[in-house]
Structures are given as C-alpha cells and as structure tokens.
Image (tube, rainbow, N blue to C red):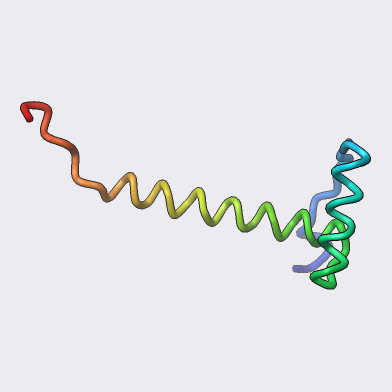
Length: 64
C-alpha cells in the first residue's frame, strides 16, 4: 500500500499490552504497527463473514 494511502494516528496503549504485542510481532517477524494492522484486518474479515452469515440466514418462523 503506498504511503499516501495510509493514515497516521496516535494510539495510547497500556505498557503491558504493548510488551505482549511487541513479543507477538517479533514471533511473526512484523513490526508492532504491522502486527496491529494485521490484527485489525483479521477482525474486520471475521466481522464481514459473520454479517454475511447473518444476512443469508433464513428468518425463523415466529409461529413455531
């Protein structure tokens, strides 16, 4: 993704959470920023899938 397509913002985060994210990112050979972006993308994909399932589910019959 080109840098002009990226948004910068300040994120305040608990020091213990940062330490865990930093270790996790290191395990997966990512920067902390990259790890956070990866996790956010995963969460959005899961949300989209859940919404698609909910939208395609047949409505329940209220008479039963």
